Structure formats: structure tokens, C-alpha cells
Length: 363
Image (tube, rainbow, N blue to C red):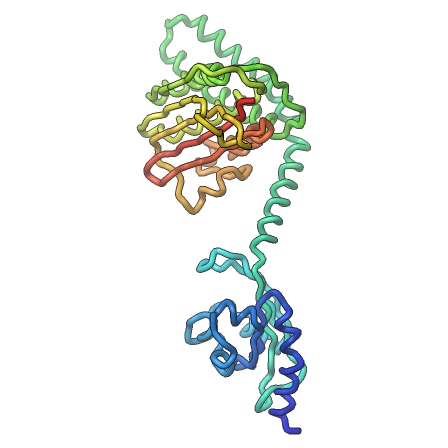
């Protein structure tokens, strides 16, 4: 039996095993010539084996004339034919791919080395790893942030009270000193807001639900945010419906509304409008088939680019400057709304503003 017949017999034995694998397998030689493929590759490329065997792998699979930058086979050849395993993000498909090269001990035609090239989509695994990493990060933050936040809030409240007291003592007699106190108050308020948000995010205590009118919670949040909105020359418009009471935790949900309003005000600091609305959904609601109450916070600010829109609920992700946002607001909002068996969604288009919709079951 000559060498070609031996290779053919080897491929005949290997083929059923390769076809049983759920990921892509290509047998190539050191010149990137395809010697065999499994059915997963053939389905992906929509080509039969006869159209692939003998073709250049870069041409048949990637549509390019030669090896791409970072090609694992090229790396294996540079390292003397050693196995190579690597992961990379494919911008064309938007997927994470694991690519593995393993040398075949027997030589191929003309003494050329052969390699098995395994490729599989690991996007779901990467997503789960990111989720696990995010949870681990939150756990580490929770270990010390709650204590730090509690420790900081008492002196912060004392400083805020002192600033308010000094403001009253001035009674308009020294405008320059009053302006400095306003700056101090704004900075201290931001610090207090961050500590409050950290406490909310790391809090494991159960909700304290009681019959509450949603529009009343929103009105209280508007009162808290109105002063800050005025400082940037912005008036927040409201259209609040008279709604029946539902069981919710007004403190925790109030924090959600404040977070959403803060984000909207930040988005319109350079001009724009903010509108907050409440309503009762007509007919079947969006939450588990029940009638629903809806809260919407809409701004006409810069909007969110489409490529990062799906990341806005990730803890610590923010599009704001390093001294402007903690990246906790929407993470807190989603957590609290989920605890109320509700849903929160974001609609945004770069340059056209953002709409945040919170839907809560009416029962």
C-alpha cells in the first residue's frame, strides 16, 4: 500500500469521528491546503467536500489570499509544529471563537506535516464568564463598600447640615461666600448619592412592600431632583396619571426613579428636555400577562450608541466622565425592578435621546 492509499484509508477511518463533533474540524497540511473537513464545516460554508478538498484554507474559509494575522497554524509552524490553543473575537460575526491546532504525527503527501484545526463558538461561555466575573466583582465590592458607605454617610450628613446652617447665617449678606457654600453642598450631595447607591446595590434585605401610589413616589423623586435640574437650567416636565395603589417598596423604587432622573438630567446638561410620565397600560400588560403600571423617563439628550446600548445595565459601566458617574444607577434600577417582578427597558438612538420604561405588575 503506497502513501496516498494509506492517507485515504486514514481519512476514511477519521471521517465518521470528525463528523460526530459539533464544532468545525479541518485537516490541513503545512501549506494550508485542505485535506478533509467534517460536516459542520460543510454546512457553514454551504459547500460539498469535493469543492473544499485541495483548496487553500484562507481562500475557502476566510475569503483572503493568505494566512490572516494571528493564524494559529502559522503560529504552530513558527513554534516547530507545537499545539496552539487561542481565543479571539471575530468582528465580522460578533462572536468569540476558540481556535485549536494539533499536529498529526504521520506526515502527509510529499512529507508535508498535517494539522487538525478545531474551531468552535465560545460566545455563550464568554458571556457566562463575564457574568460570573461581574458577580465576583460585586461580591468583593459588597464586602467593604457597605461598611465604608455607612461610615461616610454620618459625617457627610453632618457636613451638609453645617453647610445649610452657614447658608442661613449668611442670609444673603455675602454672595461670594454663599456661592462657595453652594459648590460645597453640590459636591457633598454627589458624595452622599454615591454612598447611597452603593448601599442599595449591595443590600440583601427584603423589600418592604405596602400599598403605594406610583405617581406619588415619582413626585417625591422629582422634588429631590428639581434643585439639581434648576442648577443646569433645566425644567423637568411631568405627566403623572392618578393610579390605583399597588404593593411596592416606596423607598427602594424611589431610589430607582431618582437614578433615572439623574441620568436624564446629566444627558441634557448641554440643552434638551426631560419628561417623566406614569400611566396604566390598557389591556394585557407587559408583565406576565397582568395589567401593568408604566413609568417612563425620556430625555432629548445625546442618546446612547447602538454598540454599547446592551451594556448599560452592567454594574460599573458608564458613558460619563470619571468624576461624573459611578456606573451603578441602571444596575440598581434593574435589580430593584426585578425584585418587584417588573421589567425595565431602554430605547435610545445616538443623537435622538433616550427613553427608559419601567413596567410593574398592577397586582
